[in-house]
Image 1 (cartoon, rainbow, N blue to C red):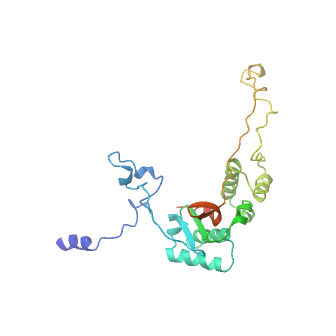
Image 2 (cartoon, rainbow, N blue to C red):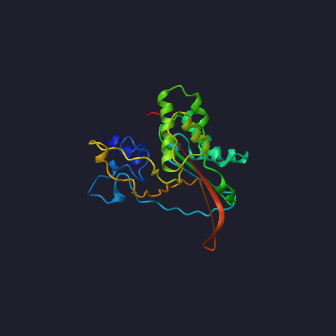
Image 3 (tube, helix red, strand yellow):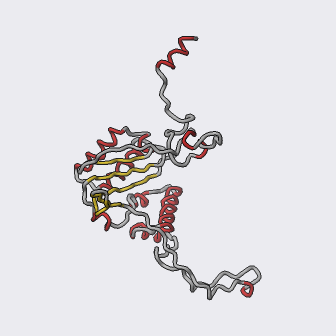
Length: 251
């Protein structure tokens, strides 16, 4: 009736999910929502066009960036309070990120992948750059009895080993579980191993003994970034940030 048509127009309902599924309408990926060939990229259901915001930061400020896996279960205010309280107690920034993501997963039951980035403004983080990479929570592997979960742990470690190297504790866990040791990150490929024989026998195998092996350098993921800006020029450490990611629970 007329009244039913008037009320939504006067007080538009909130849009909780895009097509009842996606929590955000701006971002990279999610190509199923960008498939309308009649529309420009910025006019699709999910837009890849960024929004720009400016803010003046001072020493002592915190900048907290998180994805929707975190904000599905925490408010802006709740996340800020949790991070600030932990840092006021002297906790390590990386430990704070890991702790918050753990709470989102275990206590608040987030079902999405999660990434949290915390920037401390005005902190000389030069020493952070010398800190070794680390993977938090490895001690939980020994407590796992679910074989699927154990395989997921090892699969993640193998991926890290293949793409950027492993911290010593993680490498020890992976090697101890019977996996073949991953080669050092900067090691050239082994040229001493004979090539596999072709189906017709060794005589049909390609002659690769004299082929020179190229040294492959895999990228090592950066854990911290340190920048200082003075009069528009980068001069040294000015702020530091730590990124921690986690995989959400089953949907």
